[in-house]
Structures are given as structure tokens and as C-alpha cells.
Image (cartoon, rainbow, N blue to C red; front, top):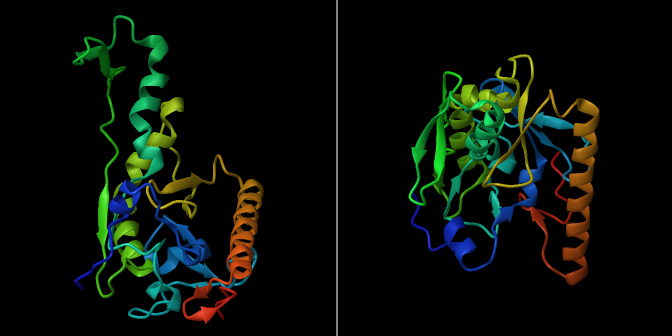
Length: 240
């Protein structure tokens, strides 16, 4: 691992700043239905949600040039990742059982004397959302490649819990035929969507909205005279 003088994402947050997703990260189309080699594509233009998509992994050992770009702005030496749907799973589970705990729920007493529902209807309360720390490897900052190589298998291992969390109000996990995908609008928590509740038309509208926001940010940077780069290609974040 490369020695780094950059701050961690959490250290940046402690200074009242915020490490946001890099504009390159918005180029990813990231699904969780299989191996990384087939589940991540890269938009050719970050400001065009309908631009050509090319594979992130180009062969068994080669990856798209975007892989070397920072995952965040500003770049950071490490980032601890959580998933939004799992962070809220325990609270959603308690809400789902709120109306039928009388006489059937098992409670633990909290320090303030209130009860915390731990088991109901034959189900245990979900634990706290898991986390994963991704550290810089070959460069002093966490790259997109560092991030996806660590986070993709981590999310795949958590897929049963993710599907259970999505189905908590229906008492049945999200069915396998519905895709789960990463929505690249945050890094920690990482926001996930699924094709049952975010149907294709709504998803495309959201993707166009994100592209419009990115385009405005690029225009603001250029107006201020800031250098705008995407994988060493200045000004347009176009990959071809």
C-alpha cells in the first residue's frame, strides 16, 4: 500500500467539509446481479445519461481508464462505506412490527429504561448496518478501482440481507428477478436502488437529473476558471 499524506474521508468530514463522489464516479452504471466483469459499465459522457456504455472490465486483467481516477472530491486516503438500506433496516423492521408486538415481542431494556424490540413474529431484530473500510492501494488516494474491487464483492455477500431489508414491510425478501443497483450520488452511505420500486422510466428520469446536476457543476467550475479533468482528459469528462 502506498504511503499517503491525504486525509481519510472521515477526517475530512470532521473538519466540517465533505468528501463527495468524484464526477467520474457518476459515469458508472453498477449492478449487483453477478461478477464485476459483467455488472459495471461506464458512460462515455458524464453529462449525457444516454451516452454509450462500455465495460468497466475490458478483459481478465484490464480495466477502463476511469479506474485510475479518484473516487472522491477531494481525494482521500481511505473511506469507510455503509449501505443506506442496511443502515435503516433495524428501524424499518421495528416499524413493520409496531402494531403486533403486544404479547408477542421480546424486549431488551435500554439504559434510559425504555424497551427495545429484539424479537417478534419469530424474527430477530436486524443488527446495525455493516461497514467496510477501503484504503488507497497503488496511489495516495482511493481510486475508483480500489472502491469497486472492494465494495462489489462486499455488497454481493450482503445481498441476502439487502433483499430482506427491501422486503421488510412485506414480510418477504425482494425477489431475485428484481435487480439491485448502486445509485452514484453518495459514497457513505452508498445509496442502492432496486428495479421493483424504481421502475425503468423513473430510473431514467433520475439518471438524467443527475447528469443535469453534473453538467451544472462542470459549468460552474469552468466559469470560475478551475481546472476540470476526467481521467486526464480536460473539460468534458468524455470517455471514448
